[in-house]
Length: 192
Image 1 (cartoon, rainbow, N blue to C red):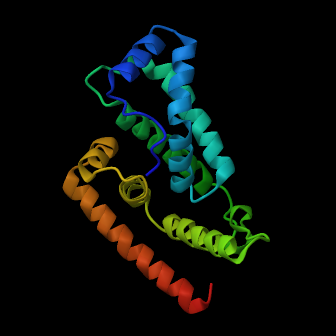
Image 2: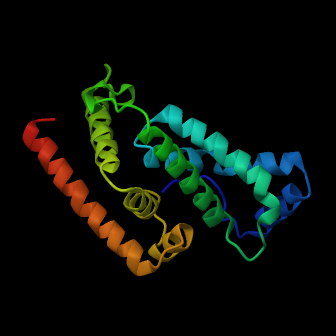
Image 3: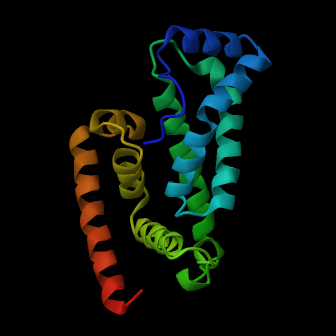
C-alpha cells in the first residue's frame, strides 16, 4: 500500500478539507499533493497498467473532486470518498475503451520490456503479467482485488467504497484470485 499522506481523519487534514471547501486554492493543492500518487497508482492498477490512461484518470478524479468537494460531509472518510471517485472514473474509462479496438498484449506499449538489468526486466515482465491478469477480470472483481490486495484496504472499507456488502467483496476477491492464478498458470505454460 502506498502511504504517502497522513490519514484523512487527522485534525490538520480536516482543516485542509474545510479550507478547500471554502474555496482556498492552496488547501486544495495540498490535498492534491497528498493524494496524487495514491490516485495515480490505483488508477494504473485499475486500468491494467496503462500509465497514460492512469494520468488522464487521475486528472479527471481531481477535477471531479474539485467540483464535488462541497458535497463531502465531515462524517465521511475522505480517502474512501476519493477511492470511490477513482473507481468510478476508471470504470467509465474502461467502458469507453471497450468500444475501441483491442491491441494484443504483446503489442501494447505499456508492456514493452526495454533494456536494463535482468532484475528490472523480470520485474517489468511480472508487472505486465499482473496487468494482463487484471484485464481478464470483471470491473467489480478488478476494483475489489486492487483495493484490497494492492492498496491494502480492509474488506469492510472496500465494501463501503464499492457500495457492496462485505460478503460480496470477499466473493469477488476470491473469484478474482482464482482467475488470476489460472491466467498466470496458463501464461507460464505458454512460456510468456
